[in-house]
Length: 544
Image (cartoon, rainbow, N blue to C red):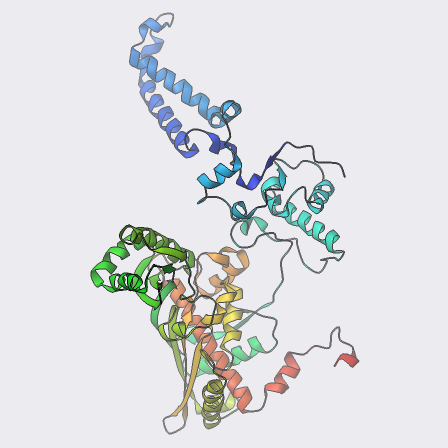
């Protein structure tokens, strides 16, 4: 294979871009140049007539101020005209070694900077054909993760990476689409090392009448019956007058783990954090890390000399994990002034608890805690749900309450809340892994008004959603959020869109629970799944 004709440097990911080698930050130089240019032009403009009146223009007719302004004007103009002066300045400026650059800019480097193997020699530019670059990736001359940066073309990088993988493993990815996707939209935000994208069908359940408004709920899933069943539940709720939701709490959490020499010393920090006057000071430190971060409370857990501090805060319309982490980091730095012997073990000590079932989340809540309820008329239960009130109430006790207790369930006192939560999360750009705690749900069913009306409710203490950040900016996911009327941040009331999305999730779960429980009570589950969730396409008779 012909080598790529390019000058190389070690660990390109840790090397600075040309503007960063200047003695001053590039942004500061740009600002200074523009200010000098505009001020000097403003000064010279009224003087043009006087300057033209000087016979045979010569320097003696100018004051020292005029000369200085002219010099400043010409210098700033040249600077701006020559693309900030980089082509002239760069050759004479020393470039520090890559390791020093990484250490000096650790807060701003890309993720691969800290974990990159220094054996890689990455070309500063990647000329040549796609074939040459594919071979360079296969041979290890060019690391796959550097393709986007080196090529300056995210779509081309994905195609080259895909071809290199296909040749390496000896199998094709023909069934995985690669065209008609905006790879720039995920660069540095959603997915690294892309080679294509997975297509998921999106169905719509509704209308769901919730809090006086009708919603058509997008659900991305490959499970047959799920959308149809949720749609039936929506119909039953809507025809009975709709559902009502209430938000009980709204606070994202992050819990760092720290260590002291003794348990007594760890307890001192615990007591310090629990004093109201100290919380006010800490909240000031925390809140200034973001326009929307608002610290609410800190709850601590002690295990010997290890202290776990669970920060709970509002995060506006963002799901808020990154926002909370930044605020927690600032507080930890502040606390070390008074507790210099505090050793920070991890910014997350699993006392949060994120993406794991935990009794703490089930009891205290995380994200949005929502309860959603509806009353379903007896005739609707019979006509739409094909069962009766008494059967539903009995089944709920035996299955969702007693059965889940027998299984030792943690937040799983429901029929299939996870199904609906996951489908909506994927459709709207949420973090699917947070389905773990977001699906915590207890479903209650009771016969009221002499058994002629079914009161049904779902209580969900940990719905973790946002309408900004994460995958919410992607075009398909943004369209689904727009369908619900919660796209982006709320201008009038920060956090209102994310809270509304949480209530919609709970309302859809209510519909899904109602429909599945009815199918089970009527003995229709197997029949419906055989009809909608089985396909003979591509399956031979012997496989059935």
